[in-house]
Image (cartoon, rainbow, N blue to C red; front, side, top):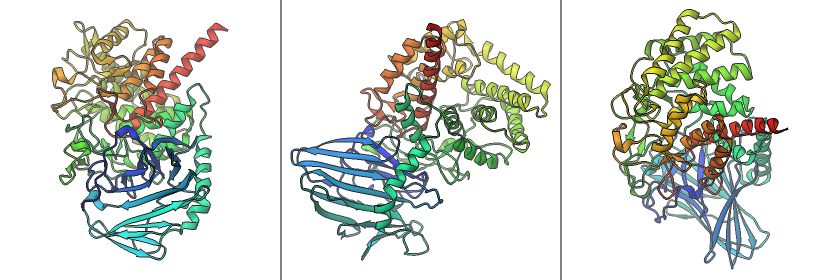
Amino acid sequence: MKHQERQYQSIENYGIIGNLQTVALVSLTGSIDFMSFPRFDSPTIFASMLDSKKGGYFSVEPQLDDATTKQLYIPGTAILLTRFFADGGIAEITDYMPLPNTAGVSVCAIVRKVTPVRGKIKFKMNCVPRFDYAAAKHEAELKKNGIVFRSINDGNAKLKLMADIPLKLKKTDGYAEFTLEEGEVAHIVLESMEEESEQAFSDIDYYVKQTYLETIHLWRAWLNKTSYKGRYSEHIYRSAITLKLLTSAQFGSVVAAPTFGLPETIGGNRNWDYRFTWIRDAAFTMYAFLALGMNDEATAFLDWIFNLCQETKLQLLYHIDGTGGVKEVELKHLEGYKASRPVRIGNGAAQQTQIDIYGELIDTIYIYDKTHKPITYEFWQLISKQVECVINDWQLPDHGIWEIRNEKKEFLHTRLMCWVAMDRAIKIAEHRSFPYPEAEWRSVRDEIYKDIYNNFWNDEVGAWVQYKGSSHVDASALLMPLTHYISPLEPRWLSTMKVIDKELKLDVLVSRYQNSIEKVDGLEGEEGTFNMCSFWYIEALAKSGEIDRAVESFEKMMGYANHLGLFSEELGKKGEHLGNFPQAFTHLALISAALELDKQLGRQRELTL
């Protein structure tokens, strides 16, 4: 199963393309080194990011000496250009995945357009699929119109490689060597085949003649739906497109990240699978879409939630089709990114208790009902059942937002989100005159409020602390003013911000918590600073009136994005990207912070007029 060893690229050296079913990560060298196929939560066909010797890859490489490379997106799209610059010529690879078109026709394919911008250039192409996380063997057959790859023991998965240049087989891998003059173009397409037949969805001419401009138009038509036209449009649009790439067109669900196994510390064991829909992460994502006027995504997600709420109690995370049963397994045959083991698929957090999810979800439903479209009474009855879960469970310890794999505790963030769940449910009921047990709900909401205010405050620390009895802060406390629990000018809050400054912040980089002191998460090793928390901090600064500081911090934070404006989960000691990539949480927090900055700057301008 081994193939030519690939040099590991830095996590930030990638862009993503996608089709609202899955994504592919394309490196600065023009190699697709990660792809789950045909869905976000399917096994990989390319995973050399997780094993350089046998993971699988799909490369197109111009044969240019001492070439430097750059990547950019065609503005307003997820169409990625990788350019190679050398004395011997300039080459360009255009990578994209066609979106479901306006007629609803959907194919799962990667289109790679190869162009010599200057000079006569030789190219080498290698398509090296490794099915079922590089655990399954496969067969390959060279046919007149392409190469068909068949997995032997991975559910009969099939791929077809097509090109308008000659293709060859190297054992069971696709290969081509070709030379193009200036002005010539070659196309290479890898598509999923229907399981029941050898018939591909389309031929090469369809992709060459129709999909490129159609994909541009579809992306730009989608982006034109946004109501945002402010100061940070470039950053917000790229983040919105990234969140859209992590959204399932079929189901309306959103994955937390499209990858698994990318480490939070190189060589460490904090390596998780995020290719699932967390209720919390998805609800936050819909908050960002709603704030941008992207209402269709929120509607599709709430339809997905409506079906889940038929169960009395929501689970923490689901497969993208809404099924549960997510189990964590180690892939012992993969060495991991730069030898970072273990490589895990599935996620053990699925079995955890995390009571905060009701708050994030009901907050999003409240915003949807208030700003877009009224929810139905049938949906309200289902929401009321979730509120009953909060009433029954809010005093219990749980594993918290950070999915602590240690003993349960009464976490501040969980308690805060229980208050949010009660508060927003009451607001929905009052706004819509829905029936609800007013006295009981208001009593529980107020009891939770007082519990947070009094019992999570530590006089010695001068802050609201991570959990009851703790002597340290947690960055999730930054959500207290963001969720309108507390005024951002409240003395206790300003004191908490000072402690977060001291304990968790390095310039604009914010850690989740100080695990090295209390070992609260029960895991060995370190992690980087958490990008989402940095954007939370910026938003909290803006709300507290420190607008100049917030603007400077935001603009400095954007300097840690990769060359395409994408963020992973964390940043390491050298500013390197760590964890799964790109991460929805980071990009939705970026959008929220930018929108708050715009709002505060607008108010500032009005006061000076």
